[in-house]
Length: 190
Image 1 (tube, helix red, strand yellow):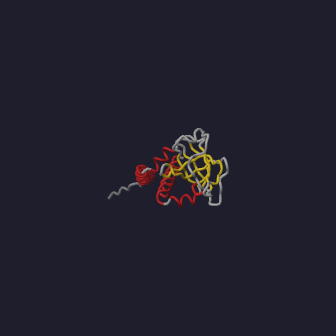
Image 2 (cartoon, rainbow, N blue to C red; image 1 turned 90 degrees about the horizontal axis):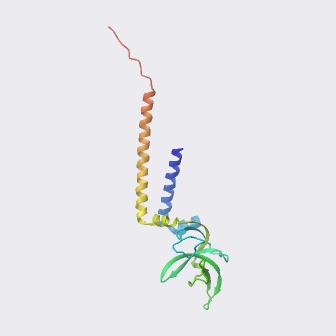
């Protein structure tokens, strides 16, 4: 039982490590293959529905898909000249003076629509579920320090497995030697 738990734990770490590495190297490929992606909620705009620090799983919308009114969506915004990702309620659309379609979004307890102008190409996907307060750990795992720490942990696990298998072999060999009966010694007399 202990060995099975150890294997599951080790495999989980390896999968997590591979996922993080692929997300750093080629995030678009991972997003397209999986069809889902996680985001961390950094503000209280969706409280109490989604607590600050939660990780939300978002199902990517295909080009021909549209969100439904009332869905919680994740979308890109230009916030004071910087790109940001928000997760808010989708409330509908309106045609602007220039003929473009604006997607109206709203925070959980807001009494008006967001000031951000969002278009269809800004929408990433729709909310599936969230895990409260795990976002701090997720943000840590994305940091360079975490990658170094993950590498150290994986190195230690590899060394542990190598040494453990060596000690197992030595223990089995010693046990086999102890179980073998001693050969009787012959006494020769002349």
